[in-house]
Image 1 (cartoon, rainbow, N blue to C red):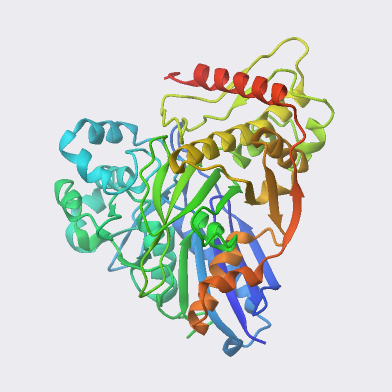
Image 2: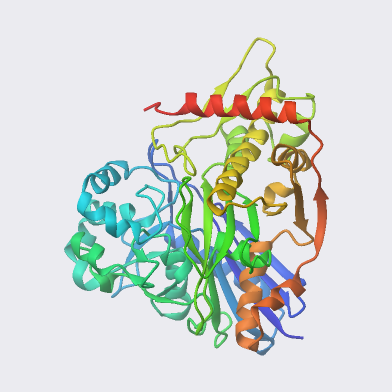
Length: 487
């Protein structure tokens, strides 16, 4: 039997999954990642904890397998999270600054105010936002003396995939999907934007070499020495590929810490007129890249964690569904989870989390239902914008991520979208996608073979009147507007 390994380094946990060549899970192991909140605006991870968790998870899942039976490794990762480390020692200069972190808003304001940069940023497909890596890099340069002192000769800046590749193989690489989330990558020339780097005094040699998503990134030095890493995909692109969205117009939504909808736009970049992002879906070595439109919202499952950890309304995340089911509806309570501002399609960094419609009648079950429904409302907005940009009407939506287990959410999602929703038999689509990609590359198989590894599991169909749907959406949009401009 042959196997392929997936390393899935996410925002809240690290997971390694060993699949056999048929795509069946042979073994898996998961470790939670500590979240550090130095202040109201900052979110950090410990880089050493991240690599240690990857090492531990990987050792655990391959301990009973012969190395020569494992043919490939795929890595998928939380995107935009950025760190800096020393080329000479390999040690990080500072904690990783997580994609949810908003401490760099003043830097983004500076960048937006410089009109000479606006045309260069357009090449990246992204708006200027704290979400992306650039402002985090500039913050590190300005605030960490050791980085500023040795910037030209001893600093590596990278997203999590680069940090893992550096530690596992000794190489300094990233792939096109992660590079496309930095606000420094030219989607049209498919290279680092040298003019932008020069204007911002970021040495190009401090950034990793960019390779196609499906190519050889080097062999693992330890644990399973000699086994090559042959696929890297940012987590949402891994989910897109894992859902077999390899044709133009295919669309998926992932319900994790945040909520991310992507639709494949083929070999052309589509500029959004409705607040979406133009990004790279994936690229196979020797072939043209495939692009996507993406809608990103930072808080989905994280809002459930907030109910659990901050308010202690539930003991376990999965308890939210049974609590919400104690009421027949939301009691006209609406929750806007703008803890880090609003991302797609609003891009309002001044918005903050808000709860509207409370009366003496309102209780924690109404609040739980409002949190669940906020995820579906945000997804509705993303798909509505995609349909406008592409002048199309999606018939259905493929879904994955931890929150798909919440039947109440999935049914409400189908109802509010007025579309059928389809999940897969295996919910770890992100890990499966990048793992299969690595295997297909090594075995020289066509990307269309991805479809052989997934089986549709469950379908939800809409069961809501147009009047109820329209009234709910009207209230949601009212809540969104009231949450804006808080700061």
